[in-house]
Image (cartoon, rainbow, N blue to C red; front, side, top):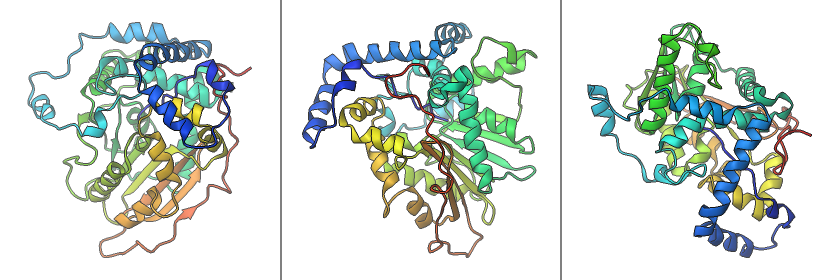
Length: 383
């Protein structure tokens, strides 16, 4: 699962009202591309995010010091697997700056801080729960998926695409003990190195759950983390029972999402294989209001290079993700609200010979709408 880091914003932005035209967006885009933004605003926003985390009981700096000490850190060893992983090509879209890291997901700082930032994001979505807000956040997705038929058979194989360090992969293992294998795939060797080390720490210590780390660490030999492009996994046709895409596609251009969805379709078992997709929903009031303010949204978008494109894509009625899934061949597509700003979706690969491209999409977001518990943009903690 990729971490959604929407950095806290400088106070001056809060006083600016929405611009009536695209001129405001153009000026802001120019400003965000300037050296001033990188030199002043990004470090300031990062400090604000750390403060927000620690005010909600997430020990950002202590946890960061601890994970750094768990090295030595290296990207690739001399094994045959490592040599093969080194040859994997990184798509151009993946090389963009993300989450205020100039090298995006291809750097150690992003990998070390990813699971800590995830705690902070959870606290922002469910501030009443403080440091445990992420547990409530993830449980909301779990419940939403189950409500629309998400299931893993006994002995099933699960694949977590865009797994990062494996937070969502480990959670899948905990929630589905009947699965025979839980495979996490990601393009970042840095994130995978951190995730693999965390799995080692869980194996080395019977008391891993009591480490200073901010996420649960449980020994689980079924979990494997591998480097691969989600659009070209290298897995056999019709070999997987569940493919999970958790908070990933907002970090992709739409064409990459389509390619990944087609790959998921290819590797899922006909007649039963399920795609589970959880994401931000820009049709919700909270995100709609945020996007209506070009100042606030442009500043947030600066840490998420494809967020504006994703918002258009996700809310499109003629070419959005659900329509693309149906066009690819998925059937029984069901979608519900998971939180006040997110949705959960389950789609099934039909049996061989069954054409589901004309099947209706079962969209229940209106009747399952949730209250928006997210902190306001300028808040660090619930008052």
